[in-house]
Each structure stands twice: as structure tokens, then as C-alpha cells.
Amino acid sequence: MNSGNIHFKRKIYDSMLKWKQERNGETALLIQGARRIGKSTIAEEFARKEYKSYILIDFSKVSKEVNDLFNDVSDLNYILLRLQFIFQVELYERKSVIIFDEVQLQPLARQAIKHLVKDGRYDYIETGSLISVRSKSRNIIIPSEETKIDMYPMDFEEFRWALGDKATIPLLRKAFESKTALGDAVHRKLMRDIRLYMLVGGMPQAVSAYIKTNNFMAVDRVKRDIIALYEEDFIKIDNSGRAKAIYDAIPAQLSRNTSRYQVGKAVPDEKIDRVINIIKDMEDSMTTNIAFHTDDPNIGLALTKNQEYFKMYTSDTGLFVTLAFKDSDVTENVIYEKLLSDKLSTNLGYVYENLIAQMLKATGKNLFYHTIPYAEGKKYYEVDFIITDKHKISPIEVKSSGYKSHKSLDEFCTKYSDRIINKYVIYTKDYKREGGVEYIPVYMTLFL
Image 1 (cartoon, rainbow, N blue to C red):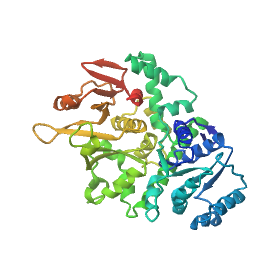
Image 2 (tube, rainbow, N blue to C red):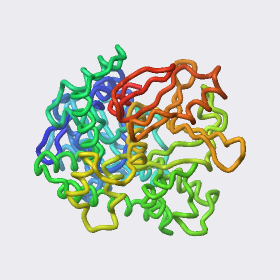
Image 3 (tube, rainbow, N blue to C red):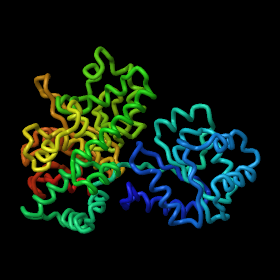
Image 4 (cartoon, rainbow, N blue to C red):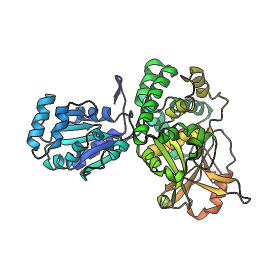
């Protein structure tokens, strides 16, 4: 995938290939995800490599003439001829694809997918950010002829690929599967690698800026632009400004270490039940990852999720770091350097927690957590994440240090012993297994 002339390999390509081979034109492919994660780029790269010809219609800057073609889809021959003429591209039956980029901006084009797919001559790929796709689709018939794929920021492996490193992750996978420690020198290097990923993040433009300039301030500027773009989108879905305030407060909320997101602290005097729809929209926008409290943690986690009790993370930890230091005009290189070398005095627990949320989400997992009140009331034990594992569940406690006590994990495992298959502590030291608990270095999270 290309971002400012740098080619990035993305895992979603294989899923797209599978769609092309298995569906053979029976459905359109809808790639949905937050803005600026590389949806358009991957769609065009795929079209260029896998088809004889393609037309890319970018609805964010298309002419009125093209837009108007979708007002009446009774004559598909006319529409398809006009598109070939306007874009000066010849289409070949079953060998060409038409890309509807930012399809949420032209709902009628999305509605037309039903007829275009049935027509069967060409393949169709749509890209869109889900929040706008949903809000702009209220008055149209949503085509059932769509195969949907979620796209996320670059994961740790894709990030290493971007830096020219193909060897690290296979080595890690082998160590994880054989349950062996890597040794001090290798572990130190990998911790530095994962901190670099935390700082730069997985937004292709930010990664590109890092590779080109090797300067964190240049990377930070790119990330600030992306955050500004997201904030504009939040104003569109909620012009009261509450969604923007809720997003901006994510680092402060996590650093407080409370058992849930406190809406009233982000938006003074606001109550959670009044913003549930806004939270849903923010989750759908894929700019945030939300972990919901499971009231009775068991194999069907979604069945016991508490909509009003949640923690919110940014979908990209690189953006999280910039958001956390947003009060200064630009995040100084010195802050980045200190974070990279693990010398910044702030407790980085909540940055690691955001990273783990992102890494789990990238592997397709939904996020849940659980709290157990202390016997005497006020305080509580909290298990940061719970994942389903075969026919049982596995609790995860995140530690930002090599700290080995895990009282919350122990309490959880005592209370729900018959439901648990594996117990994980994700921390900053090398791999080890002790007392029935697997201690996993942060960078191995992608194998859970």
C-alpha cells in the first residue's frame, strides 16, 4: 500500500483476494474503517494488481455529472457507458472493477450496488467510514449484496514490515508457541520496538512521516491533523460538541484509573443514559475502541455487556500519545525520546492499556472487562480484558512494569474458576510461566 510514495504491505489484501476468488462478483466488497487508515489506497492497489482495468470514483471530489448518474439506475448500460467515457477507461466483462471511494457521500450509489451486482459484468469495491455510511444511509435501501471487511490502523507486524523487518514477528510467534523466553538483549530491543510503535502508531501517513524524516515532531504534526479531522467528524455526528469532548478526554479518563468512563467529568453535568447513542456512533466510527463491562463473565460475553459501564480507548495508540500531550502546540521531540527510552516520569500504564486494546481489536476480538468489589465496599478488583478462548474465557491483567503481583487476576480466577482456561499478565518483562499464570511481554499480545 502506498502512502506518500512508500509501499506498505497490509494484511487486508489477503481477505480481499479471498472475496474475489470465492464470491466471483456475487457481492460487492465494502471496506469500512476510520478515516486515514489506508482504505482508498489498498482498494486502488488491489484493483491495479488483480484486474485488467478499473475505474475509481472518489465521491469526495467527483463531478456533478458523475453524481447525477445514480439518480436513476433503470438503464445500467447508459450509466456504465458514461462512466467509461468520463474516466476514459475501457471496462472488460468479469475482468474489471469499479471502486466507489467514500461511498457514504453518495448514498444512491450504494443503493445502486444491488442492481450493479445483479448485472454481473464487473466487480465493485466500496470504501467508507462506518459512521457516515450509517448516518447517510437512513433513507436508502441497504444492499444485502455486500461483503463487509473491517480495516484497522497498521498492526505491530505491518509496522515492522513498513520498517523493512520481516524476521521479528515469525521469531516471536515461534517463542510464543514454544513458551520460551527470548533473553535480555532480544527482549530489550523488542521493548524499544514496541514503544516506537506506540509513539508513531499505525496510521499510514504517520508511519510514512517517520520513515521519511526520522523526526517525531514531523510525525506528531501528521497525527494532530488526523485528530483534527476526527474532531470535525464528531461535530458532524453531534453538533453539541459532546462527542468531541468525550474523545478528547480519553487519556485523562484512563489516567484516573477509575472503573469506567465518567461522562460527567468529560462533559460537565452530562449523564451516561443521555449519551448512549453518541457512544454507539463513536464506536461505529472506529476512531475509538470501547471495552464494555461484562456483568457475568462467561463464554457469551456480549450477552452480559453493560452498555452504561465502559472504558474508551483511541483506535490508534500513536494518536493517543498525541492526544495526551495536545495542550502544547507540538509534542516536543524530547517527550518522544523519553517515552521511547522509557525515561518519562509519568506512569505509562494507561498508554500500555490503550495499546493492548488496539492489539486485541486488530485480531478481531471484542473488548470486555470486569470488576469485583472489595468485601468492605468502596474499592474493587479489576481485570483489564477478558477474551473468549475455545469454550471458556481467559482474563488479562495489564502491567506497565515488571510488577508481578496480580491480586485482581487472582480474585477473578477464584470467583470464576470453572469458566477459565488461561490466565494472562501482559507486562514489560520477558516471557515466563509461573503458578499457572502466563506472563506475556507486551509485544506478544498479537498472538492471543
